[in-house]
Image (cartoon, rainbow, N blue to C red; front, side):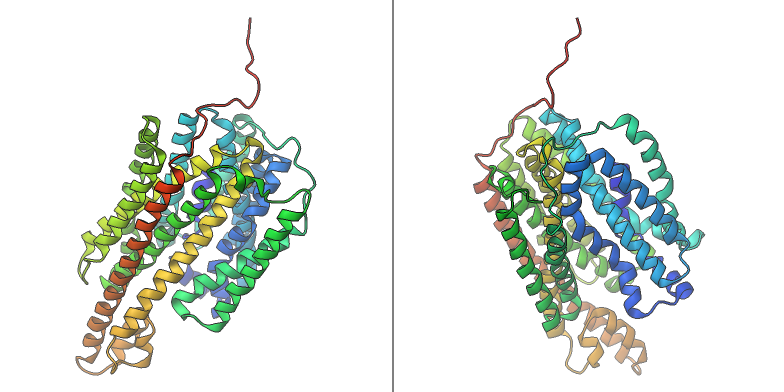
Length: 489
């Protein structure tokens, strides 16, 4: 749990540090974007490579190497004296994160041979990952308020040192005994497939369906086709196609992608709603944003208990999707002063989505051979990255389209782009015109959130039906042994 918590926190730990970094290092606009995004891009692009590498050299070894790299990069980032150094350190942090995430999940697969225990462990894994993103922004605010911006990186060091000390003692080594030759060409192909798609999808909500971003997604999909072709034709593929022939793995990856779609699509709106519609400060928004994660700690264990007591996993997963759809339904009723309704809706969405995620991870890992656990974990997590980016792109585009339709024609041109731009230009208008623009922009954004919530609810209801159909006959063995039982006489 230690590396997983820190890796997920690093996604959001710069939320409050960016203003101080900008004042200290004076990055250009492009450099500031890369300081923020480099970590997530590198992590997403290298997940499949690192998952496959862990199966070959050992998951514990890769975990410890990644922890050392993560700690060293955190130290460099904390004392970076230029934007270029910080960007490079964030890239190394992404590399370290890509080694840690699939390794933690693969080690859980080898540690817990009993299905009931593994299901509980994966439920905890899912909760920690989700809570870490919310906790990262709050910790960033607290540290930046009392220390300098580099402290948000130094917090990683004690945990990584502890992992490096205890990991060799407490964690068993495991790897594929016959992995085959590592295909180096698959590494750049996987990067070329993942990064352009993630980049294009993440830019579309704010910039619209610009030709540049559509081309980026298209190029990524072309490389994805080349990557798949190579995996199907070479003797030792990075991602064995046989994984997807196993009953349950392909549905688990697809449904996990859809759950990530729902999670990130809602987060895009609720975060902006708290700050720009309700007028909360960044710190206040982060603290309020912790409340929905309370339900996360309950959802996954309850789902695991239901499955263990004989409830068909298909119905549990379908119920999770329906629950998340109900959360989106609550957002459709939100007005411009609906703090508790929006928080409750976000909490219900999170509970439903974590229910699905924990069960899909358990299913995916339980239906693949233990020697391919790292590869399977990386595919699952890469799919989640795609789903999150797709949710932000599609639901964000719906919200933006409705916002631009509802904003008054007489509003300044900048106000037609985003709510943030409208709030920035409003103080420059004479008399009551500024207040009228703020009110209209907040109403338009809320209408956009309602429309996106309708789309999100419909998609998740469709996912519930898909889960009921595809998972009904899927079964996972109750227990297994990684090695013959040793008997002492």
